[in-house]
Image 1 (tube, rainbow, N blue to C red):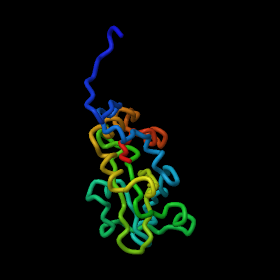
Image 2 (image 1 turned 90 degrees about the horizontal axis):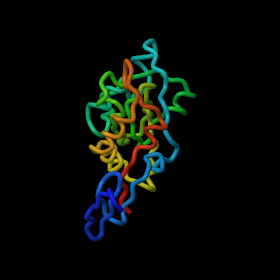
Image 3 (image 1 turned 120 degrees about the vertical axis):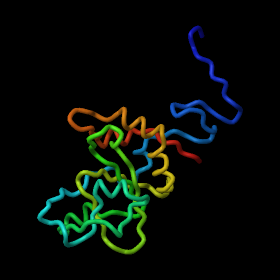
Length: 178
């Protein structure tokens, strides 16, 4: 048709919103790779800090990958909070808000090394990875890819701070091999 841009696609590849990918790979929304969806964490109260269980906060997402549970702050959680906000091996975490746009939806993942309870705070969104569909480390790499980062930053809302909601995060396109 007149005005259409012709793209020369090599044999065995297909053109997608992410770009040229192998024919047997797919582009899927992040939420389709979840076993339990997305969730905001426990509300952090300063008076409950310093004793109790380890807690992942925004700053922990930037330190090392996977999250280093040796340097997490302690939080005195209730039994209900432990049940609702307990972290699982392979969970991904995203920042909910940022002063600068490129800090929004910054991702990290949790690798359980020892049997201990770890929680996450309310400034972080947890993604429960379905490990039958995708390797958490691979999914983390996809969420930190230039395409995903650009998509998330451009999809965020900016006023005084840049924020992202669970629905927007869940719609992030992810490249998935067979």
